[in-house]
Image 1: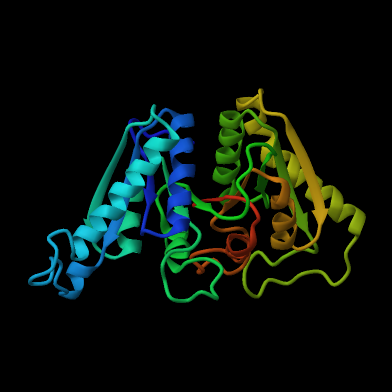
Image 2 (image 1 turned 90 degrees about the vertical axis):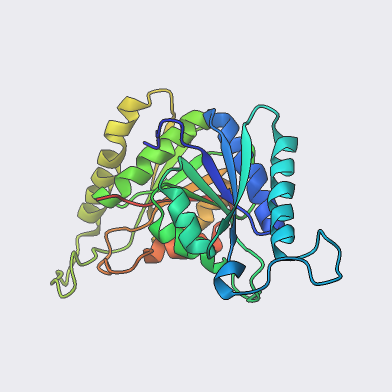
Amino acid sequence: MTIRSGAPVVVGVDGSDSALNAVRVATREAEARHRPLRVVHAFIWPLLGTPLGPAPGGPPDAGLRNYAERIVADAVAEAKKVSTEVDVTGELVDGSPVPVLLRESRDAALLVLGSRGLGGFAELLVGSAAIGVSARADCPVLVVRGEARADGPVVVGVDGSALSDEAIGFAFEEAAHRDTDLVVVHAWLFPTPAAPGAVLPLVYDLDALAEEEERVLAESVAGWSQRYPEVTVHRRLVRGTPARVLVEVSRTAQLTVVGAHGRGAWGGLLLGSVSHAVLHHADSPLAIVRHHR
């Protein structure tokens, strides 16, 4: 699924506590995958024409660039505290966070972000960079939020669409890496239109619908179970709103996995409504896997 020869795990840092927590998680992910770790800080100030060096007469280690370099150095040092086995490098990259991280995602096996940065909007549950990157990254994005657990299953939400297949594969791979069970959740209420304006029946046979949704769930995991026979799979068919169900299940998970899109009618949205809601409210680290056409 996420095999790219020699590709590192990349973690974005900005000097916040959330970013340092992401560094710790990213280091453990790199160690488990036997991959190097690359620490990146997006340095936006050159784009704004701001003086970067020390002020005249000020200490030589002052200035925005020196401060940014310390952010990277501190993050690299934190990673080396977590593991002495991982090859850790750090770089200051000129540019704004989302474009820099999207470029990094092209050559990464996994991109790890904190759920909050140093932005001034404290009322927001998830930082804008995490939202923007999760929607468009070329590799899976792990957003570190909620409670980090060493035990508990990997949880993945499925909807029967081809768009969720890569998320399912990533979840199987993670469960195998972590030597834990996989809980595959399919939540449903009533049929949804396949496209805007599609006509749906006025009367439903709930028993027939449940049987059909059970078939969707079973077929979603069948091929992957054959590829990962060592992973114990628990299938959960739940009547309820998908986002609400996944947030509830995430409370006992060590990792929750969703696709960036589902089978809803709003295909133009960069981040699907379910993945967007889970990104804001999940109670465990969340992996968002984007479908590549």
